[in-house]
Image (tube, rainbow, N blue to C red; front, side, top):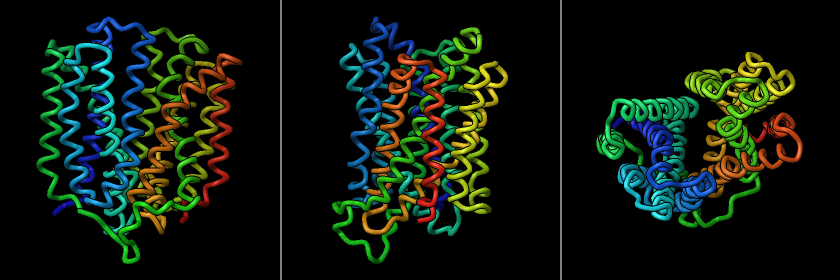
Length: 373
């Protein structure tokens, strides 16, 4: 049994599955004749499905073990992806995205709980490397699906091809996952016990970091286009710079965490990310803004893996429940945060709104000692 390899591959699967949907969005919009407002509401269903499934995932991992939850949810992801290409209306597409998001949400919680188990067995930090492979999967999934479509492959056929590749990962790795890792003091009431305030503080910190990541996804191109004078075709360079920096630093993150410790990762990383936002917004010149976005990727890269590891080590409730709460709060930041940035930008400017994100990251640095627990 090789649980380390299996964990790496399931993080890769999650990244590929999630990112494969992105190149399919314009096709869905054109095929169903959706306007931007309707499309925005439909796209929200994916995040809502994930957020709704995550609390349930904590109970399921405790009740049935990480292995079976990962395996079954992984199969559901494989089924859901092709369904997105054949939905006959906006309503059906919204339902398919709810199903797809819920499947990914179950995988997300279970794989992070499993990663905590693997860390405990190996006796060293490994979470950043796992999340690095999720980032790599995101790049592979979006680029691979885009390449298939550009080569003229039919949309549904492309989705089935990706699903088949993911199915191979699930079926070959299922038996290698650890069922569960229970501490001696954990009892059957663990999934129903209310976690302590420390878990919710971790969730808040995760919310802020996910908000920062979401602002890069939704607003970096807008900032480069309208504040720095980039043309529309190159405005996506900001998110690309952020993503590459994050992926590289996550792949190196376990070694760094072992050397400096989790508290330094959270404190230093949040300050570096805050500095990145300030550099980009205070000097709105193209190369400077790109450098700022790279700093955001470097700083934010390893904070979430450290927070997830800390949530899995909290006593009292099941590790799966703690991770489910932290993950759900993080996704709330990813979903609602960019909309909040838009609201603040409407009342003031986008630069001021992004500067506010820097302020929240400073708050994360002040609470960094929670990662020690």
